[in-house]
Length: 320
Image (tube, rainbow, N blue to C red; front, side):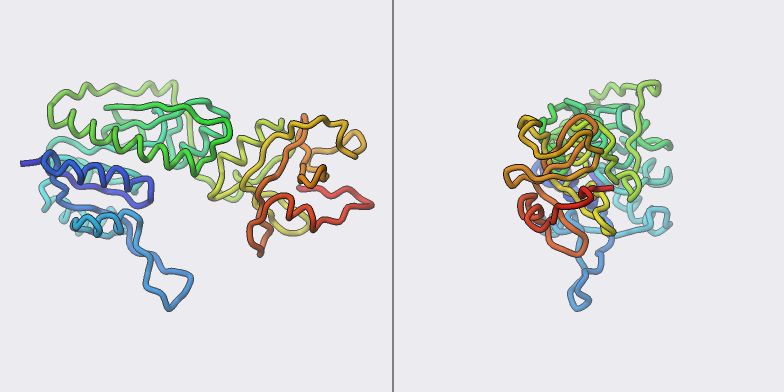
């Protein structure tokens, strides 16, 4: 009989791990899939939207339990009734001890960084924002403090110089699926050698919000490039243009000679210009080409299309 597994997850990041566990049905028995509750769609006449994990679980014919309250006695009783050997958590909520202490062989989490680096809600985003060249995934046993448990397994990967957070998250979800299955096999075989995290090496990956996703143009161009791709495509980096917000999805450092630009000197960071149809914005030490943007209340467009709608003359056009 396979090891009894309860899987908990909600977004797309968790789906490859769920599918890989289900594919190894002779080794692991998925007795329950826990996910968040269906969310209302914008169209009030439409049915509520199930989570990506729920969609995958139903497609696989697996039992599903939905909850937005992991501290309810009903939830703990439901999980306990499944008699799990292991709980696998991938992008779910913070579990209380009365739940994560239920399995006979422990509860482990799949995290999108090489712990103890980037403990927190947005590890993939902050790795790119900070210009890291490598990252990875880690499985670790849950304990009371978030993201601090003993490490079981880890796999690393390079970060592409132009790779954005959405692209990297997809790759890490596939890498992580292999790490999860390997972790389950190690637990089943009794070969896990837990590694205590070195708290002195820990870095934070705080939740993204309106304040920490706004672009500060008074930075080097490479930092701006990393910031924008680290937030793309969601929640996205943003700036103010006129009296409205503008999201920036894709950009790259301008590689042409500055002498080719018809701008005077000095130019303040955030200043806009157009060269060869390309929309450019000034950083602290050079220019950044904007490739994909979305003005407030409008559809996304390429930088060249946005530039055609600009009117230069008089005071310089600037982001703020």
